[in-house]
Image (tube, rainbow, N blue to C red; front, top):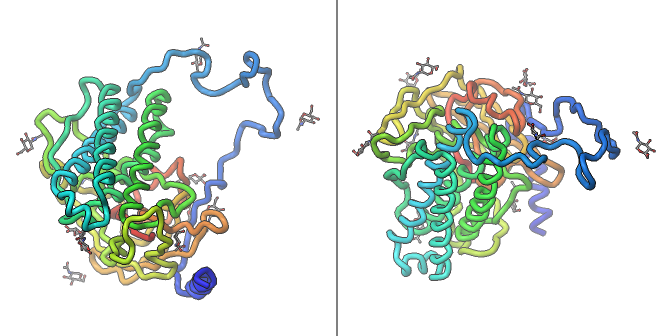
Length: 377
Ligand SMILES: *[C@@H]1O[C@H](CO)[C@@H](O)[C@H](O)[C@H]1NC(C)=O
Ligand SMILES: *[C@@H]1O[C@H](CO)[C@@H](O)[C@H](O)[C@H]1NC(C)=O
Ligand SMILES: *[C@@H]1O[C@H](CO)[C@@H](O)[C@H](O)[C@H]1NC(C)=O
Ligand SMILES: *[C@@H]1O[C@H](CO)[C@@H](O)[C@H](O)[C@H]1NC(C)=O
Ligand SMILES: *[C@@H]1O[C@H](CO)[C@@H](O)[C@H](O)[C@H]1NC(C)=O
Ligand SMILES: *[C@@H]1O[C@H](CO)[C@@H](O)[C@H](O)[C@H]1NC(C)=O
Ligand SMILES: *[C@@H]1O[C@H](CO)[C@@H](O)[C@H](O)[C@H]1NC(C)=O
Ligand SMILES: *[C@@H]1O[C@H](CO)[C@@H](O)[C@H](O)[C@H]1NC(C)=O
Ligand SMILES: *[C@@H]1O[C@H](CO)[C@@H](O)[C@H](O)[C@H]1NC(C)=O
Ligand SMILES: *[C@@H]1O[C@H](CO)[C@@H](O)[C@H](O)[C@H]1NC(C)=O
Ligand SMILES: *[C@@H]1O[C@H](CO)[C@@H](O)[C@H](O)[C@H]1NC(C)=O
């Protein structure tokens, strides 16, 4: 009954959606030099060991940055790990067991959040050890929540961009060994994000693939919550794009949906009108207000929906000063997997550049503002 209603709603909404331009498809790939017909192309290196792979021959792993790209990316990770540690501790300290109870969460749930804080100690330590004397320190933070529900909502959002921010550069690190250990911390963080969604009464994992974003996109989302950092702190080299707000963003906080393993919920739908407002170039943001927003893009033209494997563009309309509207597209990653769902990323861009997960950084010069986190489900 509900299913057929949703199917009808989806059909009816097709006509309502804005024109979709380039939608990336990860199967849209450059030519591969390897012929994958199931047969070996080279003799085995030794028994049970196919030829190829990187550092598979007994090389000693180097768990250190091997380039500026590695250092700057890992530096950003430590900034992220420290805010997660601080956030989880702050939530437990600020809200009492009774406050948590009123939001449907018990002492064991609080203990789980404490365990997550402990995990963050380990993550910050592991990445800091890779950076050695160049590792950043813990900062002071500012948070946009006033009660437990809003705290939990903020946690599922912060861990979303923490996770996706790493996926954007992980495969590009020069140090494959550093990437290995970082991956092992991010898979833990992915579980934290899912648990906070359950604490919020959302569907825990409404997508088939988790999206990746660039370091500059992650830093744009993170910087506003860092109030100040100690003297001598290594700075972040990545860009702060002008901030982007979805002014009619759906909220996951709803008394009808208490914490649960899962609720089948949709917070937005194809054809939904989405309204944006964004900040200016030259605004001071981040630690000690010492970072300045910038963009090298031209005039705003498109909303880029970074979701799962696809980046889909919809046209903006009612573009006025630093505000515009668009409509949620009706695209699927694979058949049966609507691309837009969960806590996902939208940017304002000057072009509908075709990008796929491994070359999404090509989009940076075209970002007018954002990303914003869009609460689609
Ligand atoms: C999104 O990417 C998938 C995977 O390549 C592709 O099959 C699908 O057609 C894309 N979606 C759209 C709407 O183009
Ligand atoms: C990104 O990669 C895809 C192949 O996956 C390619 O078709 C596209 O042109 C690339 N985009 C840019 C901006 O280089
Ligand atoms: C793969 O190996 C099998 C068995 O030797 C052979 O019959 C087949 O022709 C090979 N396929 C190709 C594409 O070379
Ligand atoms: C092992 O493989 C790496 C690349 O994967 C290569 O740079 C290195 O020279 C190889 N070492 C030996 C001893 O063959
Ligand atoms: C927290 O505030 C939101 C409004 O932002 C409200 O909807 C929610 O019910 C509140 N939660 C608790 C546990 O008080
Ligand atoms: C940032 O501000 C704090 C608090 O005023 C101060 O202690 C700290 O030294 C400043 N950090 C930098 C890098 O200037
Ligand atoms: C998002 O996923 C949830 C859970 O599977 C589902 O109920 C909802 O319909 C999905 N939203 C869209 C727009 O497909
Ligand atoms: C976006 O929302 C935040 C929090 O509500 C607010 O502080 C900021 O000024 C808004 N920015 C824009 C560009 O609307
Ligand atoms: C923005 O970046 C461009 C390119 O690096 C630079 O020329 C410009 O001065 C920057 N603007 C601001 C406000 O920092
Ligand atoms: C918005 O743009 C209009 C027309 O360009 C202009 O008259 C108005 O002053 C602008 N408003 C603001 C708040 O910048
Ligand atoms: C899609 O992207 C390509 C390359 O990024 C661009 O040339 C083209 O104009 C874009 N728009 C459409 C509708 O294909």
